[in-house]
Amino acid sequence: MSTNVSGERLNRALTVFLRQELQAPAIAITDFLDIIIENASGGSRDDLLADLERMRTASVRLNAFVADLVQNTPSIPQQGEPFEEFYRRIRHDLRTPLNAIKGYSELLIEDMEGDGENNLRDDLKKLKESADQLLGQVVSMAALTRQEELAPQDDHRQQTGMVADVLRTLPPLDTRNAPTESSRPSRILVIDDNAANRDVLARRLTREGHDAETATNGSTALELVAVREFDLILLDLIMPDMSGFEVLRRLKAAEHTRHVPVIVISALDELDSVVRCIEAGAEDYLSKPFNPTLLRARIGACLEKKWLRDREKQFIVDLEREKRRSETLLLNILPQSIVNRMRDGETFIADHIAEVTILFCDLVGFTAFSQTYPAKRTIDFLSRIFLSFDSLASELGVEKIKTIGDSYMAAAGIPELQVDHANRIAALSLRMMEAVRMISESTGLAIQARIGFHTGPVVAGVIGTHKFVYDIWGDTVNTASRMESNSLPGRIQVSETTRNMLKNSFTFEPRGAIEIKGKGLMETFFLTIRNK
Image 1 (cartoon, rainbow, N blue to C red):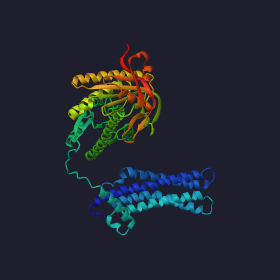
Image 2: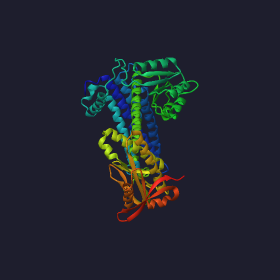
Image 3: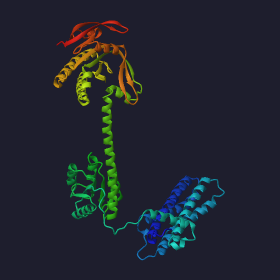
Image 4: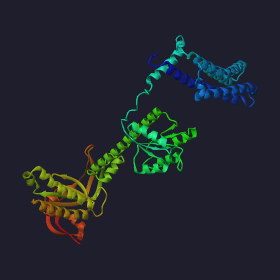
């Protein structure tokens, strides 16, 4: 046994340990008796009931004494009473009902040896074992009275060593040291109608390095928490006008205060009050007068949990922000409906779409410009144009597919069907032309757009597992690309197929026929204006 555990502290701990050890077998004795009496009733073994009831009466006395020993003053030696005398008194009070229980159980077991009631006999044997166990604990109380008496008894030495090991892990408090400032100063609200209580608590908290505020009643407290944030609330229970319990309920019902820990400090120490406050959301309950060291520990524990909860909440906020950021980045790459499908678990997305209109736009003169001007100015100019294209496409409900160098590709009718897809692309092409003209004039750069578009079926889908790309494929894409490459600077070339779909909504000029690989000649037109 380590010498760093004082004999007085070890004796106190051993007393508490043995008090708890007495309770389990005492309760077991009563439980077994209830079962045995229930099984013997009903006429099967009425001859046993008289002795069983005597045992039951003894067990009630036994449990009442043990409960009193565990919870109340008999666990403490009377003033001036030597430990030896204290344990002798306890042994006497315990052995009296125990002897009755053991005596009757032994007699009943002997009487039933030849009977077939094995279950009753077995339960009586278990009851006797519990009584023997409790009697052994009574003997231990005598053996543990003094340390020097433990040496020859291995079982008692083991119990003492176990208790001493626990005490070594719990070093005693140094009450001589003044309170140190909190490593994490916090704002704490003290709610108490008694001025002296408020002042004492506030001064203790200030000495600990906290920012303490006080409220004289529940109404004032609720007004304070409505406009200020607190890390902890110390709450009195018995107050005029509004009780502390009502304040607690309102704090826990409000969204902005429900997570603030509350320690109830009250002279009302009945079990019902403690349980109801804990059920209502109180973090802890201390009875007045409180121990300052215990209060400091409870406050520290509550604040630590509050800081952990705050960190968790901030982590969730940061996670949600990153989620929104990732969602925004993903929506810059993929259409919303495609993102939704992927979120729902689709891992392979490929659609055949019967009719879409595809647009290609190329910036004529940009290549020469990029070889002449600094990279920063080149990128800035291209960004201004493509950002304006993106804005126009979003406004008209057109899906941007991708950019390739100084080329811009967009489509309407995907991924959702749009019956007016050709009209959307035609309107977009005219506004793109106007945007390039205005930016070129504002920058003084001679850049023009060349646009072409065509309508037909495509295959659309997502490729890639890390760098996702939503793209489209098919002859319609190739034909739309030919419309653009065969167009002229500042003009919009349209296939005959698309021109027929647009009918009288726009004005066109005949351009002539061009060769389309695999399709032969195709009539084309220049789109000029949108008809009113």
